[in-house]
Amino acid sequence: MDQRAGAGDPDGLERLWTPYRLAYVSGEDRPEGGYERPAGCPFCLAPSLPEAETLVVARGESVFALLNLYPYNPGHLMVCPYRHVADYTDLTEAETVEVAAFTRTAMRVMRTVSSPHGFNLGMNQGAIAGAGIAAHLHQHIVPRWGGDANFMPVIGMTKVLPQLLFDTRDLLTKAWPAA
Ligand SMILES: [Zn+2]
Image (cartoon, rainbow, N blue to C red):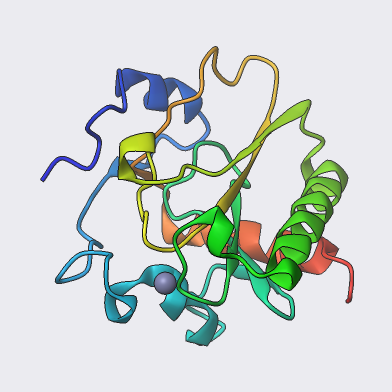
């Protein structure tokens, strides 16, 4: 299946990814049975992975932050509730507050480590709206720099080499303030 349906011009991603020419396009990580079941949900799995394998940057009481395996830009983070819930209105008050707090902290951390000029923040609600993993809510925090691109693709499927992602994870984790 084409997970990039609606993504627009794929050449745009290549322009976004000039520093990462080794990036490649892949949908091979899609789990058997798709993303609809928690058993196949990478956001449900991520917090329990060993340190060497997880892209989790910070852990809170009810939410966590992790790097996007298919980033729009270097440092593209997502904040997810631990619970497998799809809709923003399904979040508890505590989760809602912590998603907001983590989003603000992520912005501060990124300003410290990579001085972005701006950010795109937001949630795609439902596959029709561009959510790659619609079944598990995730708030995107995408750092932006002047000249990185003149548009933002709604769906990115460009995969960065894991080593680059783990280096970025370590950088952000070190800069993330202790709770
Ligand atoms: Zn999940």
